[in-house]
Amino acid sequence: MLETADLLKEGIKEELKSDEMLLNMGPQHPSTHGVLRLVLRTDGEVVKEAVPHIGYLHRCFEKHAENVTYPQVIPYTDRMDYVGSMNNALGYVIAVEKLMGIKVPERAEYIRVIVAELNRIASHLLAFGTYGLDIGAFTPFMHAFRDREKILDLFEEASGARLLYNYPRIGGVAKDVPPGWLEKTRAFIDYFKPKIKEYNDLLTFNKIFIERTANVGVLPLDLAISYGVTGPNLRGSGMKWDLRRNDPYSIYDRFEFDIPVGTGEMGTVGDCWDRYWVRIREMGESIKIIRQALDQIPAGEVMAPEGLKAIKPPKGEVYVRTETPRGELGYYLISDGSQQPYRLKVRSPCFTAMSVFHEIARGGMIADMVAIVGSLDIVLGEIDR
Amino acid sequence: MKAYFQNIFEAVRSILIGMKVTWRHLFTKPVTLQYPHEKLDYPERTRGMLFCKIEDCIGCLQCARACPVNCIYIDAPKAPKEVDLGVTSDGTKKRLYVTQFDIDMTLCCYCGLCTEPCPTECLIMTEAYEYTVYDRSDLLLRFAKKGVSY
Image 1 (cartoon, one colour):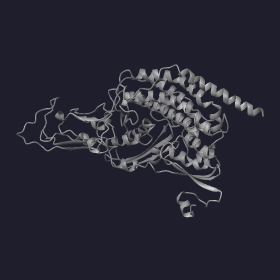
Image 2 (cartoon, helix red, strand yellow; image 1 turned 90 degrees about the horizontal axis):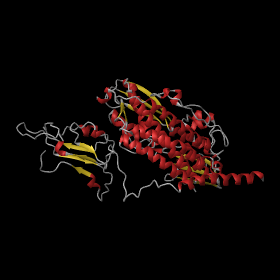
Image 3 (cartoon, chains in turn brown, purple; image 1 turned 180 degrees about the vertical axis):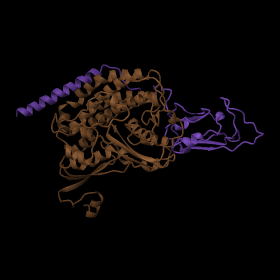
């Protein structure tokens, strides 16, 4: 039996009743998507209180950034959200470019959009595959990873790495894409489009899957907004908010695409199934963007001349937010005129998604916790940084 | 009662739809490779183990400065005026003895930033990705050989 002091240490507010029990989930649990520890106060099968404990993957990103030069921060940003690295680095380089007033060449902008959207598909595929895995469906995972692998192959050809790319650079991209890469990307999206229907057959409309996720972990819109939840989680609650459309960065204002929102098709608006369904439909929208970008991409340089010299932004501060696969990723950058950032604060979308967890987990079953964590699609590397 | 059987029917129906996908895939080629026996061809830009062609190194320290994790250790004392160290393969004149050129691959983060500023292109990332060793110190690559001045 735990004493009250111990309970407070675990974040549990009140003393346990005699028929209640504290249950530790994580930090090493296959469905916590990283190292996340959940302390659950359970009454039988019902979770009365859920307290997430984070910080197991803390690597001092923000402090590190103050001690390295501007280009050297990019490999560190890759390691925050390691399944959406391109999008992380993209936000950072846009922040520095805004501070320095660099005009990025057209071709580089298009390449950035193509790789960012490919990365969004890869990230959503991982979310889709592992969500099935969490719920107990193994087959969709293999399908998702087969197709994700093709995207990683494309990335490896362009950047040289499969996971931590270090590809977008301040002023452009590291290298122009190799010859034939754009055709391969087009072949991939042609191949990938019919696969989404396959995923739906395998998992989305499976009755067992729907029973596990519909009406579970309902996140009402007002709660989502008051906690600052963004990305597919917010859109799953029915809000049409996407920074690519509402506050366009890079060249996203040139593309036609829809913003999928949750409608409560299988249950309540904002349940796990809605969040999941938003991600699946977003993959289709990403394909649309990539196709348009491939049609429009011009020839030319991929690096602005300022990017080749030593990066030394003028004094000042800037806040840039971008839409990563997980939501609004913000970089608040202060420069003191030297070659190293004075301060770099990251606003993490996963952190806000995680902070709403205790609200939507209350009253659920223990087995639902896995479904809720999976549907929020968090990456602990980004929460802890 | 009706909803109960409806549910069962729905579950069986949707499982069969899923199984149809699985069934179709039974007749396709496997996508996996039997790894140690078969290997993928890696693209040209693959960032694997670092390699330095030390004969071409001029000891300019640019790679060490570019490294975000400071895993490159170089010691390059200046050569006296009368000593001619020769030229690199691209014709750059060498002015420094490179007595130490160590890369700690246990620290390396494979970002490739060090290979970009190299003026003589002697530091490259190879395709090698299998380098398990028994001792951690074996991953400290020493490119400058003892007693040889470059």
